[in-house]
Each structure stands twice: as C-alpha cells, then as structure tokens.
Image 1: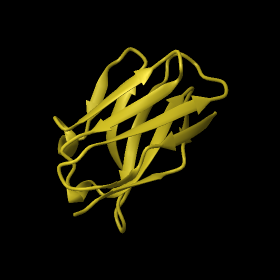
Image 2: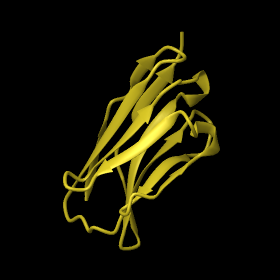
Image 3: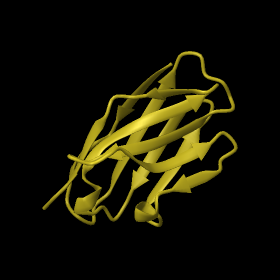
Image 4: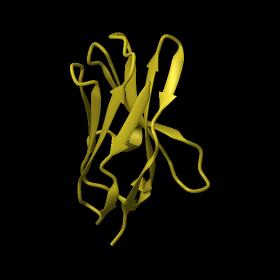
Length: 114
C-alpha cells in the first residue's frame, strides 16, 4: 500500500486548506484512514480519522474547524481545514490501517502564519 498526500502550504490565520491523500495497492474495504500531525519538537498526534462505515473521530483542538471525508471508490481521504490557527502549523501525515498494519504517507507541510 502506498499513500500519496498533497495540498499543504502557507496560509494566513483564519484561512483554509484542503489536504488529500490517495491510497494505492491492495486495499481492503474495512480499513481506517486518517490524518496525523507533528509540530517541531512535538510528538505526532491524531487529527482526525474516518472508518470504512463513515464514523469519524476528531482531536478536540480541531473539532468544529476540520472535516474529514473519504471516497471509498477512489480510496482517497480528504481533510478540509477551516479557521486555521498558528498552532495548526505542522507536518501532516496521512495514515491507513488495515489487517493490523499501519501505512503512512509522506508528510505535507502546513504553515499558518501572517
């Protein structure tokens, strides 16, 4: 399984960005996809996940601002980020979990700064 993330960049506080991640390879239907982030000097943390049945989970810090969605036919997951704050600055990683194995995409930098 390979994950290809895209969509990072520089945005001003209060702005929006959309991250996308496409999975390829052998994909099973009952998987979990999600986004994690890691700021400099910090541990990687969960941002949001979405299960194959559509159930979502968000970190408290992003609830109400971020929205995760997926297209099961295309094996993609999208993270819509609104009302961005400087503390959202981090490298964002896409992750897929299936059959007790975790797969990570390359990180994409998100910088929120004026």
